[in-house]
Length: 102
Image (cartoon, rainbow, N blue to C red; front, side, top):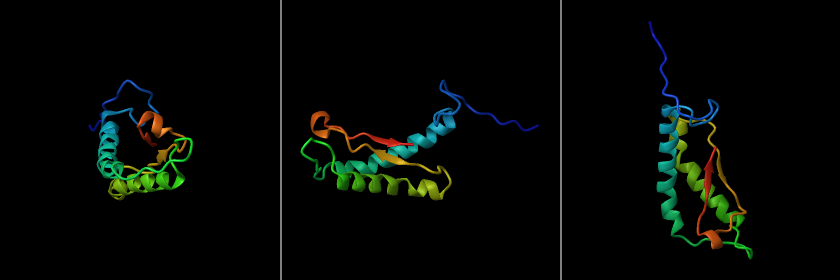
């Protein structure tokens, strides 16, 4: 008798965070992206007149984030991971850059 045991969390079954096992994968991806981004956060941040991140800066940050999780994709730990950075963020007002992994 072989049973498949999963450790469900208190979110929708369709969520990326539906099981503890999935949480571990997402946490690893977040750690890798954070480690890669810390170095870039000390570099110049180019914004437009409204304080929004420039398209070139968004592209650089997306590339750095995507590169940091490529090995996870090669190893089959994650598939189809999309890095999203909203260029309409007002980083001058908030002093934050929000990066979404979907």
